[in-house]
Length: 318
Image 1 (tube, one colour):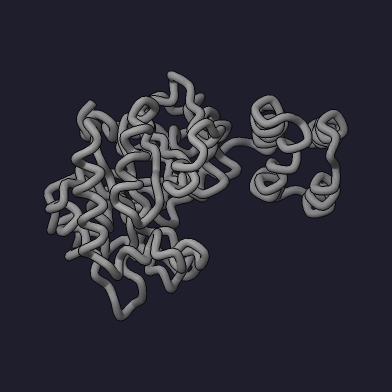
Image 2: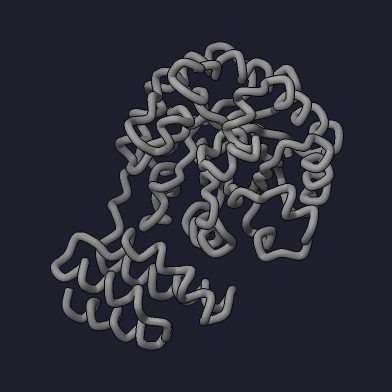
């Protein structure tokens, strides 16, 4: 597939480490049949050591899907990209992760301080794969290093087919506000498609982001937590003008019970799956009386049937 075919819906699921796993991708795909899914960040160092890992798992209906790699060794990343071609429709290079343990290893957003190395990575990977290659980065490392326009141009020169840009610097992490208007500066100075990322949590913010960024589309990350239907609802609005309502509390409880807990336990086993799901509880169980108390109780429960029983009681009472 060509890159334009992969992003035809104008909406993508942004990669989130430990979040956009097989289960969440499958759930988003239940709603949106055409959005571009992206895996959680896959370390090229780790993948080189262990190829048979759950992190690369996919279903046929996950397509179109991009597999995101992190690292700073061009040849190693290229070899991993070549291996992942059997799963992926596109390979994405992480150049935007702001987390300390990632940038200290000169991966993620640290690459924005080493344009030559970033270009070498793109060139080396591009030579090893036959599918589109994308990069994801930020506005810069700090406010004094806003090099995103030049950086995007350099990635395009090196062979990148597609860019996703988060409208914050590394120093901001996830604080403050994403600057969508700055993304428009990049869009005007490159020829490849650009998706805007950061703070898109509703149909309204999606529309505003598209207007201010002038981007070809948007990548939704944290907005999908607690509402995996958001990507589809945004698609329907920007492509057909149809405004679909937010999920009700009953629908959110149904989703976390059957789709999140049920699917994760089936995928990982009960012991690991129940613990893994705890991170999602605050996003689904909020906005009703006793929500805080219930969240605290569920986090302590290790038995799936007991969790289902507690959630059923909420459904009866709402």
